Length: 405
Ligand code: PLP
Image 1 (cartoon, rainbow, N blue to C red):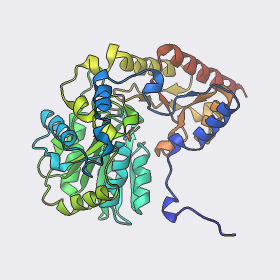
Image 2 (cartoon, rainbow, N blue to C red; image 1 turned 90 degrees about the vertical axis):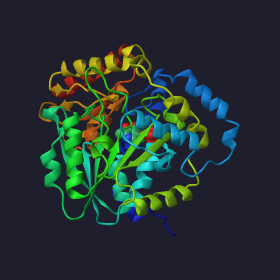
Image 3 (cartoon, protein in one colour; image 1 turned 120 degrees about the vertical axis):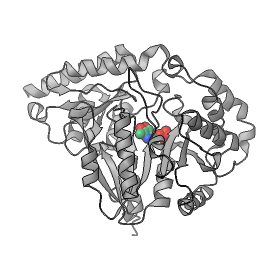
């Protein structure tokens, strides 16, 4: 009998937020259990709905969306993206340098396919959003992880980044605001990272999908602005999170900096964009409506509910013995540390599965974000505080039982 096997390229590719832990949650659900899924930053299931104008624009575009668009996306949507960055002071962004995609996810894969040769080293943060590490593996490139420093608000260490550069290093990924840690990098940190790219001739790959979801006194700083005219920067953004329309799959990547030197790379990206024909056109209609006007903090986070839920979750986690959590300043998640000795944890995926079976609560293990130790997990902070309180109480109860066992 012939067996059909996956390609060798998939050997090291992982995407654990939807991996075996989710399969186990679905098995429990099929048995009739009600599982609270706090593994995905998906807004709508928690009642966080899009602005009605965005939905109306998609509805109005449905008829026209029967046709393919330009492979890089609808001109009016690309212009809206370019204008968004110009308004943010990023500089002379042209819609010719905007590529739309089926979410940032698709564009990460497409961009790395266009950029990376086997053996090239790509600097990726640890912890990271795991599509980055997985997509580097897919190309045959080598993800080299630089550490974010929990003791320093999860800011990346500039020295650690620099120490990991070799002649094979091609690109430097930053995720700001960060998933899973909720860190929002200072202007100094973003400038420091851009300077490393400048000094070593690297491409900056800046994932800014949580750009608008920054809270309190945190401010978002665009890497493209720090990169200026002399560092090639590819900025990834989209509507999934800041605009609460994950399912529309509307994302973009924007190239800025010395674009003449990048013409070959951008031709490669265009070729791959042509091969996938075009992104889903329906979702593209949301983009001009979403980006067309300045948003107030109230539109970004109505009633301050996300800010409140993040702070509430972090405080409740910190009240559990042996658990500590750096308060997130942006995005949608908490990434607490857990005392592995106190709770006898050696494998964090095993811990998450055991918690799931015991409490019917799904969170994601930290090693799923390429964190090197089994001492963290990520919890999505989207539900209202009553639901969060129940989830946090069940984590505390579970841990207390585990400690006694
Ligand atoms: N980048 C980061 C940091 C994310 O957290 C996510 C989703 O959670 C994505 C990219 C993918 O977003 P989408 O494909 O919905 O645009």
